[in-house]
Image (cartoon, rainbow, N blue to C red; front, side, top):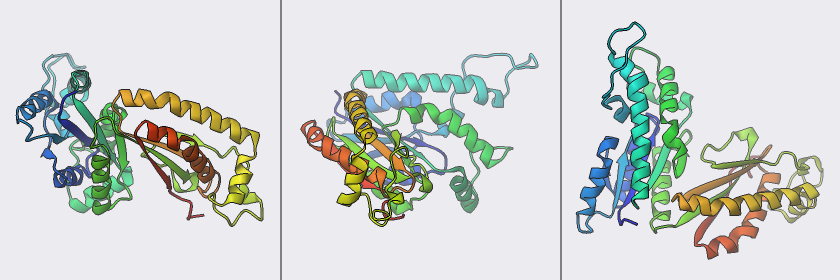
Length: 321
């Protein structure tokens, strides 16, 4: 295991990567914006030669690196002639960029580099509004619409999103809230192998949490909302808890999800994933999902503590119903 911690910040244009890297700089990271992925191994090597002066670095890697990625192999276009710049970006350049990016990141991890990926995203509506407000042009929207550019960018960056240790949806976050969230992530992961598991309840009526790594739907369970004497209470009330946990399907579901979590945790740690969000949803996020999350927390708390895994319990929509 190498001594330098590397946080690779990626995500959609306009999602807040500049805010994120500044947040990491404020907590002691050496930061570089838009470093070409081909230079990442050399950059890490140079940092290792700093004799301990540089112990944690943050690098922004986004679609700008793809646009400038060199294409070394020629291929004919549909008209039989040479390749245009647009052809390079959409086919050969795209394929080579994705292939080499995966290979470089995977090779660095195999060599013992502590590489974490923080991926930022937001809804198309929010991103389009941000571009409109700043009057900036999307890097892939040249000659086209911002919406088309965003859709293409999502497609091209999906591979790195799939590799991310944590995905942050910034649609509803202010710059200050995003800074706090990024710094919290950085501080939680300051010890090698330290992992955070977030158990999150939510209501489908208020939207799916985009930060979720695992998503469970418990709307199949009997709903306390339709029990007159329970409707006004939240899922943390003992009467609601007793009602939800009494059913055989609830008990069987908990057994299955416990087994799944116990199976997945060592595999995620092996991949150096430092942040795992397990979301459980019901209709309004007030009753069933709250009970299930609290019960999972009770079951797993001591076991996670023994493994030195930090546990966070969050009820996103419990007070909205």
